[in-house]
Image 1 (cartoon, helix red, strand yellow):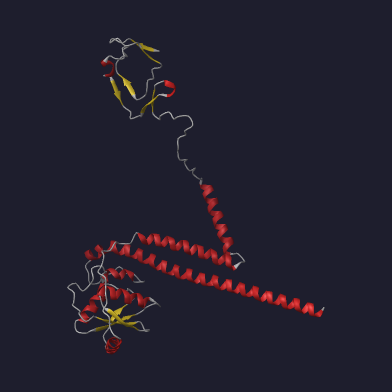
Image 2: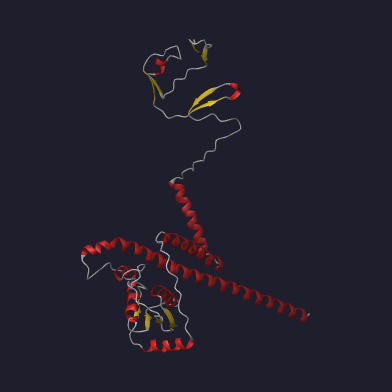
Length: 336
C-alpha cells in the first residue's frame, strides 16, 4: 500500500498497488507526496504503450498495453497459417501429379479431353493476366466516318485498283507506321492503293483491313481471297502533316515481332541500338505471350470440337445399341 496526505485538504489517497513498468525509469528516490511536482520531473517516458481507463464494477483501473475486453467479447485475430514442411509440400505435389497422371491415362476419352481442356483454360486465364500489364492507355481517337459510295463507284474504283501494279506490302511483322506512311505517299497521285498481306493466316486479312482503315482514314473497297485489299482515299482527301500515326510503332521497333528475332540494326550506331534494348525486351515478352495465347485459344477450340464429336459418337452408339436390342427382342418373340 502506498499512502499520501493531501496538503490542500483533500482526503488521503490510497493506491491499491504500485506497478513499476519497464517503460518508466526513475532517476531520484520516490517522494511519498504524490502531488509534489518535483516527483514527476525525474520520470522519462520511453514507450508508446496504450494507457486505458476501465470503470468496471464501479472501480477505476488503469491498464498499460492491450485494453481489458468486456466479458463475452473476444478479440478478432486472424489465425496464422501454419507453415508446411518441405516434406509435406513434396508429398502434396506428388499427389497432384499422380492425380493428373491418372486423368491422362484414363480409359475414358471424355476424362482425358476434359482434363486437357481445363488445363488449357487455366493457361489462357494466366496469359490474359500477364498481358494486362503491357496494356498502355491510349488517347481517345477521332471516330472514323467513311463516305457512302454507290455500287457503280465501288465497281469503278475496284477495277481501277486491280489494274495498278504497285502495291503496299504487309509482312509477318503486321501493321506499323511505315505501312500507313506508304499508303499516304501512294494516295498523293492515285485514288486507290493495293495492300498485299503475305503471309497471312485465315481471318487475319479482315483484321488488317479494319486496322488500316482506322489508321489511314481510308475506305476498304474490296478484300480479295488472295490476301489483297483495295483502299480508296476518299473524295475530300487531304494529306495529313504527320503521315505516320503517332500511336504506331516504327519499323526498327517492330522488328522484335519477327519470329526469328535478332536485335540487330545494320544502319544504326551502337549507342542507338542500346537505347532500343529495354523496349525490345518488353516487346519480345509481350509477343511471346500473345503467340502463346493464340496457340492456346486454337487448342481450346480443337478440344471443344473433339468433345462435341465424342458426345455425338456416344449418342449414335447408344441409338444403334437400342435399335439392335429391339430387333433382337422382336426376333426372339417371333421365333417363340
